[in-house]
Length: 627
Picture 1 (cartoon, helix red, strand yellow):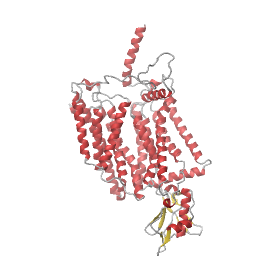
Picture 2: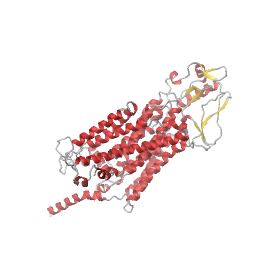
Picture 3: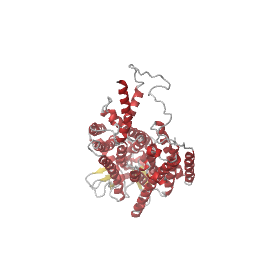
């Protein structure tokens, strides 16, 4: 009986697709983390606690999303409640199914990641830096915290067959999942043995909940909360006469948005989960990882993945859109109410990330003089490089006539286009040339002029072999010139928003074409999952190409940054022109999606039709009473 109850549990309905999407999504996000780790190793930093935290986060994410959605969905069907089975057995079957399903997602996700690590490391040992060693510790930490979270969510109002879709429920779910993330990080970083304590706590919570279950389940709370009107204090009198006015613009606005949101999505947690996740992706797009780690971490790696996240939280069928058709609301207003919060969360995350990143960038050297095995070198950020479109070698010269070949890197193997540093020096460079190049780099990056002679006299000398070395202890321009601040970067924000929103809205417009009466549900789902998998394949392909040596991720990201900078310098109007062109392009794609949204045909399905039957019966009784 127990196995039969578990086999037909409702939370297994979407387990199959999550077992596929979980590893794919994790590997996609892990690609960004791996690029950050590779850049940090190139900058001289060893993988540390931050890398472990990021790895735990990407393993935790798919299981947490599944658990949050499954826990807020129905626990038991009406058929289950009518069976001659005790409530304890029904609750135990559902809890075991939920816990085992969540563990299955964690196990499959980590197993696929470990298999990929073995494959990559076997082909190229140098790429082992892309993965955090000792994956068993994060796996154990995430698995234990997920079991405790499942037990805690099942202990919340355990006598209900389905949790009410209210803000209180969403707050409990988010709080439990956030606590599970904190516990996972603490276990993985400081006390892996504590997983035993967490598993014991999950067992205790489950046993106590099972012992306190009521004799029967109920379909809804026995004492529903009284209806509240936005903008009114508790206990206030509300006039329903013809002269009644709205309680307040803010309250009415929130009520309108809530009504639109509930009618256009079948996923209650889509917005609640989507807003924090988009805030995080806004931070990634802002370049905060690079500022925090000091490596050449490109934010353009996250463009396609951000579009994927936007599509995942917006492309849900508007099952109850027909309820809004009778209201004085245009479809344009409805679409804007659905889209704008997602875009606003992304923009806010980007803005906060840029504020923090600018502060961090001001605290580190952008022109680094370092001593290699033979002589002094100059390192500058990759966006300070230049693009050679013709493929011809580039040379760096000085007024004295000294000439050396520039250091180059290729974004794409086999391409004639490459990047070169106009500030590089070579083994045979003289002290005057090194000082001249360092002065040019300071002028280009900081907008300040430090005479070459001053740099040479303060930092540089020549050894017995004729190579340029430091006079004593190295050089730090920021320590000696603390007023140096990097110049503002190019207008990357409008370009990033154009790429992210353009891909998202184009895919969303294509999906909206399937919401027609003549198109089957199977076709709609096929188009949806085809778009989602297509975006993931495009995102993942850049890391596959990098692992096979076809592209250099850091050089490719630098190419994008330099291209934006060169466009701002070449176009009339500079950054303002890029802002205007990007805004017009995004507006054009949005209008195309809006045109498809106006043509959406929404009719009640079987579940919605059953919900309408009581309303129709009530209306018939009212008509009979009137006549």
